[in-house]
Amino acid sequence: MNQDQLRSLFDLTGRVAIVTGGTRGIGRSIAEGFVAAGAHVAVASRKADACEETAGALRAMGGSAIGVPTHLGELDALHDLVERTIGEFGRLDIVVNNAATPLREDLGHFTPEAYAKSMDVNLRGPVFLVQEAVPYLEESPSAAVINVISAGAFLHAPFLATYAATKAALMSFTRSMAAEFAPRGVRVNALAPGRSTPT
View 1 (cartoon, one colour):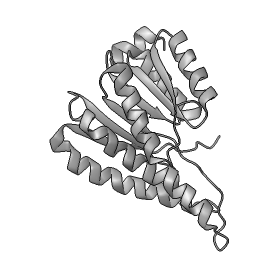
View 2: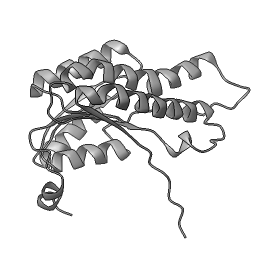
View 3: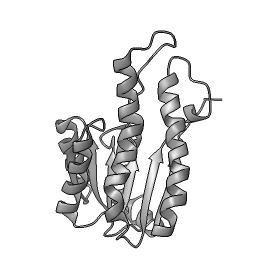
View 4: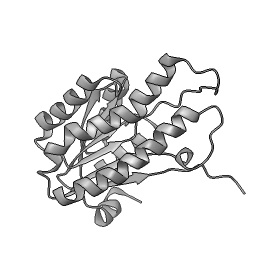
């Protein structure tokens, strides 16, 4: 499907999106899809060089994009991400919470440091990013939050218990956000990618 075909189905012309974990994998594909549909995109990742490379690639597609180095475990960085996006594009319509860290943590052998990192990046970061974004989302005529969870939120996940737990918790937060923010004009949904098995 080319950009004209995509835009005819999903027209996001003029809208502004933040995509965390937007420099590779699912996040980058989402960012590319948004640009192809006409949106301005702020891609966030811990690595500054990856942010700039991705933003450059999105601009080469004909889009409008910036890269904002952001560590989801640092609350000040979340504030800066939102403010930088507003400063560049003047509005905010979409937040995609895609970034996560799937640290292996064997049950019975957790460390407080690894546990805290998983919780901070996978759960606290997305929740507080939405909190930073909501005042601007409320001003949008078509505001949306997409929380990327995981099949691990519904299935057992050996050696990834904390990751799965954070995704299940984010699903619960998604339900509460959807109920509380709907009267304020902000749609909230979860996206749970699964792994297909070859047949």
